[in-house]
Image (cartoon, rainbow, N blue to C red; front, side, top):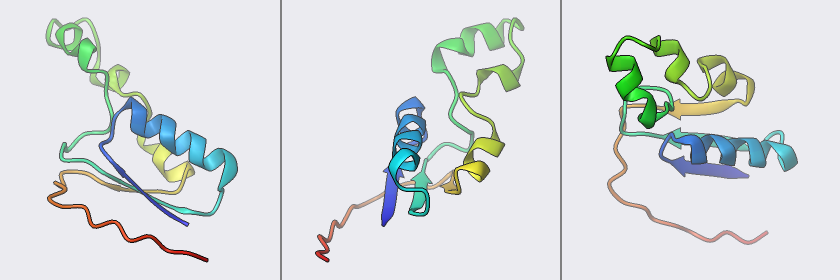
Length: 88
């Protein structure tokens, strides 16, 4: 099966983990218009104040996406969605 997740957020990461619990081989693609891995937006003020290092802002590191076999497409905007239902 092929899964496409739009948005690389905590919800997207949780979706990847849920999918991998029941489908170890399916293709997972995450598309995000941001150039960064998923990060905690509320932590930006701490980072700007110098209280946090950049690496502590990310929910998961790059290895997570590699381990979960996720095709991560950063800096890519989704313009339209065309859903096609496929039946076995």
